[in-house]
Amino acid sequence: VCFINMTEAITKTLESPKIDISKEILVIPDIHGRIFWKDATKFDGEIIFLGDYVDPYPHEFKDQDINKVQENTLVNFEEILEFAKSNNKVHLLIGNHDYSYFKDIPCCRHDYIRDKEFHNLFTDNKELFSVIYLIDNLLLSHAGIHKEWMNFNKISNIKEIDIDNEGSLWQPDYMRGGDFFSGSPLWADARTFPDKDIEYYQIFGHTQLKEPYIQETWACLDCHKMFKVSKNNIEEWKI
Image (cartoon, rainbow, N blue to C red; front, side, top):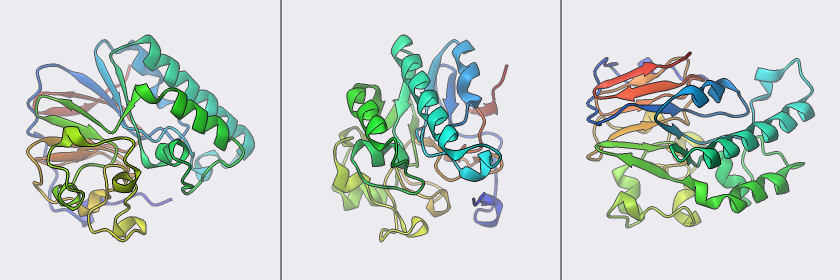
């Protein structure tokens, strides 16, 4: 698996992101069958999962039976769903791997054995999922939102982004084997992001990193850790 070295692609990391929100929130990046999220049940506040609950990386479980790993991934996802149902402060965003089951579009590491089970879990719980979460000047999504992608799809307001619009959401950029310079909020690669694109501070995952990469106007947090986000601050959160 590829861990991106963002310092080779972008010139600076900032300690003081320009985030202007009125409360602390907890952000949980890509899960992919991992259980690092479970202490989030002890966080008293808004909790946002950035998506990709499914399709574990085989190398992370190389000493385990892959069928058992996939079964545990299903159970882990069911636990996340129950967490969201029991706590109205929990918000679930949808990622490209999730969307592949939701809309029956095979993606890498797709679990064909449990394909139907995952599809049913996503469709039966559709009301729990969204593409974006917006609080004050902070915009969260799975992979980030490019202004160019919005223009290409004739979206004038981010609130118009529709989870059912498969045509606009299933658009991988050239870094992910697609034909688009700017990928969708499910597919955009962090290495394609400009310093400033839209009027919000953006937080997303999708591009797997060894450590969080924090810019003045956006942050990619896909590094298997949870993060507390507050005014002008992003920091790792753990019990």
